[in-house]
Each structure stands twice: as structure tokens, then as C-alpha cells.
Length: 287
Image (tube, rainbow, N blue to C red; front, side, top):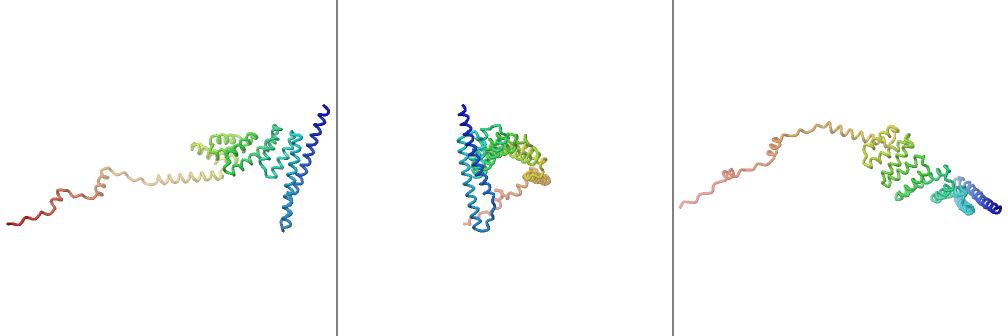
């Protein structure tokens, strides 16, 4: 029993040593990356490039140390967090998300960890939306972020936007309704009311969409989409006023219509009159 406990403590100490070496490499990489040498000449440019390469090499060495530490003790959450930070500095978003998922599984009750993963998933979802053809992946990322951070209205707003991009209007309406339940005030609330108005219009609910725009106008009257909607309504009202002021043409009597058509029709000569006006044939000569 004592040997088992000593072995476990030795494993934990070795994993901690790998973690310490990785953090030292990360600190060195941060110092190299934060140096802002002005590239006044080619020598300074070469120094900047050399510093960037050294920083990348330190990050790769730190990831190796952390991976060896996780091989010894996979339950250490801080190793996953440190490795996620390394991948973020290397702009590897997918690997950073995977490591944060492992950290959340190790400590599911840590609200800060869940918030970090939700924020990173939101960033990844926006990247998928920017790509254009990966809308389902964006919906999945935003949905997972909303489950991890259920009290943040931004997660549900982003999910609704992704669902609108995928033409799933009814689930988008549910998501934006939940976001409005969490926070209906301020400029962000006006944005959500505008989004819900567009979803209502897409579902054919014109009156509900107009009502949402009116609420958005009361919350944030300077919102650009609210102002555009108000201008469009004023133009529509002006056109209706012009149509009402224009005098309507009186409907002519049917008899007057018949006389007008008769006057417009060219006159046709009667057959008997034509025969009466035609010249008579010549008489035969006398014998």
C-alpha cells in the first residue's frame, strides 16, 4: 500500500515537473513574442523573424512537455488548460477546443472553465460562418456554447443567427426568444428585437414583425435598422396620400360609351344607297 502511494506521488511529481518546464517555455515564448523591434533595416527584420521562429519552437516544446505530463497523470486539469493556451498561440483553434473539452470533463462543475470553452466555441462558430458553406458546423458550435453557458444571452443570439443562415426559422425563433428573456434591454436587446422581427417576417407573421420593430424603436430609436424601417414606412404612407389626393375619373354612362364607340367607328355605306348612286348601264343602239 505504501509502495502504491509512493508511486502515485512520484507520478504526480513527474507530471508537475513537466508542467513547470512547459510554463517556463511559455514564459520565454511570451517574452520573445512581446518584443516589438521596429524593422528599420534588414537586420532588424531578420531578428524579428528569428524571434518568431524561436517562439514557435518553444510552443512546440511546451506542448511536448505537457503531453508527456498528461501521459503520466491524465487527471491534471491544468495540463489541459496550458496545452489549450499553447494551441491558441499557434492559432490552432480546433486543438484548443479539444483540450478545453477534456478540462471541462475533468471538472464539470467549474463555471469558469465552462465559460472559457463556450467563448472559444463561439469564436469557432463565427469562423465557420465566415467560411460560408459550413453553417451546420456553426450551428453545432453555438448550440454547445449555449448549453455550457446557459445564462449568457449572446450565446443564444449567435445560435439564432446561425439557424437563420440555415433557413431553420422556428428553432431560431425559440433561441432569440430565450435570449430576450435573459436580456431585453439596451442596444443588444434592440438588436434581438430586430432579429426576431426578421424571423417573424420570414415566417409570414408580418404584424408580429412590425410589433417587434416598434419595440426596438422604443428601446433604441437611433438603431440604423429601426431608422431604415421608419423611413420606409414614411415613404409608403406618402405614396398612399398621393393616391388618395388624385381625383378619380368619372365612370361614363353606358349610353355615352355606345355613342363614343359609334363615333369612333368608320361609317359604312348602305347597300341600297350604293346601288342608287351607281351609274346606269348604257342603252343598246337603235336598229
